[in-house]
Image (cartoon, rainbow, N blue to C red):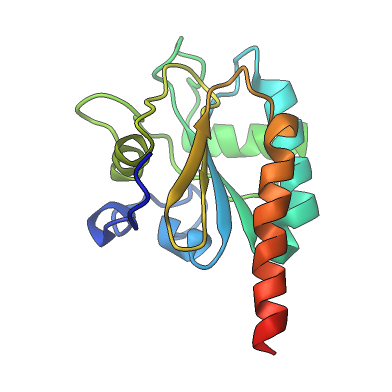
Length: 172
């Protein structure tokens, strides 16, 4: 797996949130991030959204963010508009993490953020709820498909967040 830092060309073109002008770099900067391609009508939706929200609740205050990118490429399971998707996930799952505009994650029209994730990890999403773990410097640490639950990767995220906290304490 490649460990290079994300080129600015990729992150500078990150999409905006459906509700405001939030950029990918702003939310990822100096944080551990779990980037996920999400869909509202998938068999993995409920479990993943609930567990992703729990991660955000538990680690969000401590240099961590879930960054969700709706995608309709797999089974046409994210058919709504950005506004409809945002309203649904906030109402149904209490989502508080950043939800970006709907994008393509594979193929010639793939968003630049996902081009970087695939290039760095060597793993291309082939369904909804692929998860890419990124460290504070922008390096892709690991990637998992939808059959790997969020609970299974929680310890790895907790360890990375713990390292940030320890480093910050040392700097004081």
